[in-house]
Amino acid sequence: MKTIIAGALGECVHVAGVSNFLRLAELAGWRTIFLGPAVSIEEMISAAIKEKADMVGVSYRLTPETGERLLAEFAEAADELRDRGVRFVFGGTPPVADKAQVSGFFEKVFSGKEGDAEVLRFLRDEQQKSERTSTFPSRTIDRINWKSPFPLIRHHFGLPSMQATIDGIQKISKAQVLDVISLGVDQDAQENFFHPERQDPRRKGAGGVPVRSAGDYRLLYDTSRCGNFPLMRTYSGTDDFLRLAEVVHDTIHNSWCAIPLFWFNQMDGRGPWDLEGSIREHQQVMAWYGERGIPVELNEPHHWGMRDAPDVIYVVAAYLSAYNARTMGVRDYIAQFMFNSPPGLSDAMDLAKMFAILEMIHPLENEQFKIWRQTRTGLLSYPLDPIPARAHLATSVYLQMALKPHIIHVVGFSEADHAATAEDVIESCQLAQRAIENSLKGAPEMTFDPAIQARAKHLVSEAALILEEIKNIKTDSVDVLVDPQVLAKSVLQGILDAPQLKNNRFGRGTIRTRIVDGCCEAIDLEGNIITETKRLHQIRKGNTT
Image (cartoon, rainbow, N blue to C red; front, side):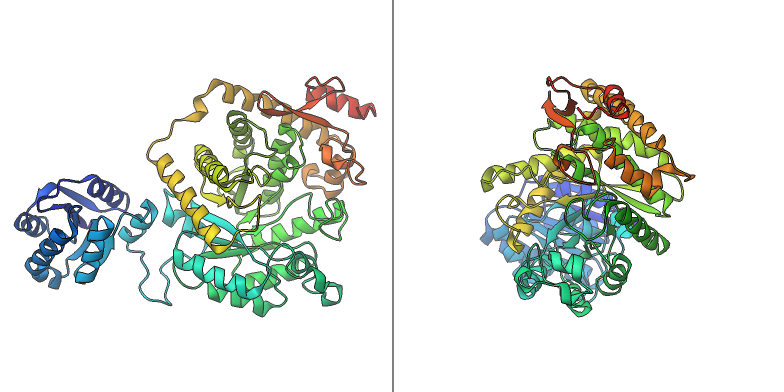
């Protein structure tokens, strides 16, 4: 085990930063020695020799001019130790850090602007060695394990022009605040990438960057090979799924697949497939990625929540997602938990819904099927004003940390107003990182709230009734819950339903919902909460109320 010693130099008695630095060093596997405040040059060098230190951390937070002279004396006295291979780092206020940087003596200078994750990365010796060489893990699960206990940070990015997106990706990568760039491409690229004859020039850039060739994908990826070398991933498209999977695998090394189960088709107007056909196609994509050992995320349940479906249907959709992924051979499953969907849920009842999902999908996990948790803020929940929007982002991420996520999908504070620029992405990630760090230092255990436990238990019980109803749909299939025909019928018959499916030929849209005591509940014509036992009974009798 390597040894690091650290203390405040000279007359400086401010050691909070030193203590935090050593705490992170312990997480990184170092043996740590705290020298305390007001350590003389002679004492620090003597301690380094006695403890056979591999690294010496020096802090000074007083007058920059005094610090400059003191650091010059220290560098002269410690030069022999540096020649022997001892590494020296400095931490202080920005003005003193500037002086330390100019001295050229210290391997790394911290000014206090760095987050805990960046300091921990340095202490793990994972800092970048050259401009074009990365020591950052290039596969999702490796990077999750490497960055632990901090979750990976992911953010969506894609502007209406290639050049603006290229410039933004470079700026984001160099900022080193983001682990995963979720490349947002325009709708024509999602649906008509292999059909230029179907593309509409007037729609170019609508919804994201207009990639039109494998070379475009490759250029965007190559641009990101700097800074902290973020992973890159993108949509699975709405047509020609397997052909597109091959392209994004070969060009941007798609870090994981994200695909729905019931959506991105004629039902929501985002693709050419009918409901049953798209379910079958989506399952094939899951299997394709599963065969290659690439993680798969089903961005499914929140689509029900965003269409005002009750919480219990959100929970059922999450279970069906995990179940289908496992059956299709996925080994690493990324379970997505979008909070605030629909908007209006209370924080407590939002958490209860997520804990219900965890309770239901946990039994699916085994040696061949690992579940990784990814949380995010609701797309429709941001206020328009950027100041409360920033507050919403930070508080939402803090709440999400109760799930101990492996990945946090940061939704930029600008979401309600405009697509995130590079500057918006960087600021949003910094806001999220601070909320993460605050939580990891000791957040209250929200799972102990009796109201949350009771609501989660209720949702699990009600969800089981819906799953049993789906299993009762007549079929010759051995495994009903992965049968595309059965799954499509469950929507058509209204077993899975949402108010915004009204007048949709693939669904019912007859369910009514309302936010009651912070929960999204199914209600009857009089506005009273209706149990799943009663709702499902009405469906069986053909009563669409």
